[in-house]
Length: 610
Image (tube, rainbow, N blue to C red; front, side):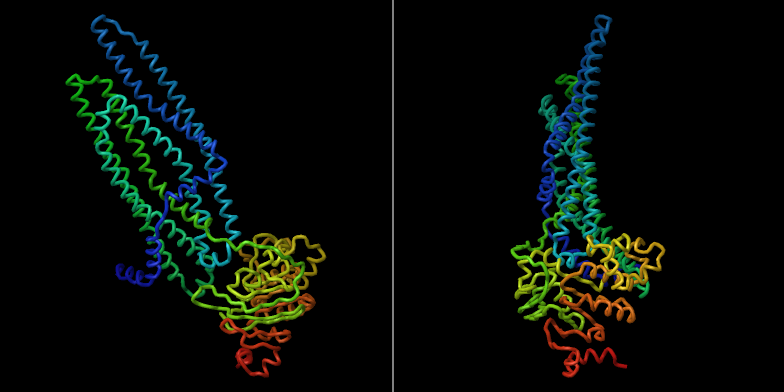
């Protein structure tokens, strides 16, 4: 039964698994990503070099200890022979050697402390810069980027992936440096003592190295997939818990759990494969280490018995044989962390290298917005599905233009193009006779005010949220705005009034109250061109009428765009545009369009049909 259920789940989410497989097959440039990550050290080169020097010196000092161990054995051997011959022993040379070893290890500890202290500052500086760069980059990306990427996945890249990079660099970067220095230093000393024994101890290493390279090649694929699916998990959680009321209202808890289980199982499988493949390295290197150790024990014992080598040399060599492979063991143990962090870094750099909004030419400026003119505007979100085609419209100062039509007709897209949230593929849009592409976005949006159907309020007081529209507004202007938007009516019933702090997602306000606050924010901004995109959709009919009455004075002398589904609210519009499939199919006043008895009349009558 369980197998059947699992099979059904696989069929149900086959599309997701196909997408995951495609993601897995994408090539990745881990070396290129590592270079980009290191490029963030610009400005901290001296600290980085100092850390490397401390690591090198500290590691070199630590590997000198076994050499002096051989000297102690040699001195003891001489003193034992003296004892047999002369009946006396002199331990003063041993005391000098022990003092030397103590000084060496104390100095090694000091350099180790310095390298960790400095590296902590270097890594945190790098991570701080990375977070800052990502944050600034997000503010420069076009809306199309956010439309094409899951919000949870973006958040995962900013938080989980950067934290993963931070942990790996902080905990493993120094170990990489010390391991490399230790390996090179110990190998050099071993060769100094005996080239033939060095070669013998490293005989198993080339085979293990080849196998390790193959393992690393495959494991990095799963690490990359692991962090991709981690973003999918975060996206699903963010989506389900943001809309948890809707999930419960439609009794989709079971489906949401199944979807989570499916993605979580995918993450478990990829993580298991990545960790398993990387985990193979440690026992593999340990095998090579032990094999080399056994070889030296056998060969060394033979050389001592035959008198071809002194015991102190063999003892030192056996110690260094263990030491020479330990850095490789350490590197294999952190290989999974290193690859995991590079996979995370690759996802972060995907954001940093994404195409930004087209640069503003800003050759023109406007101080106020009067007329708006669309000329043969064409636009599509995807190349194979045209949305707006040859759209032309002229709106004069002071006119109230209503845009109506079925869902997907392109009403909101027209407003997005006017605000330069998206750029037109062809044609032009002019405000006060100036092409908006020749205006900076800040300058253009300074004369535009917009109230969306989806409200956005941040955590803060009600007053802070309203003042967001114009932080320099006077108290008098603030009071006029809140009264015009009918906000004062419900805020006056709250104990703390406008100092009431909004909870997360403004949960302590109703949907209608949230809408009123956003309308007050737009009124306070006092724009020359006002855009209302279903702005009263969450407000009851009585309040909607009150708002419309209050906004008549605001609209006077301004250019106004109203996108509405409730056609009863736009009867007094100077011009009504009826859109369908990206084109204007009818235009006129309410009365003239009703007389034509066309598409508009059909939509209007359907809203009041019994």
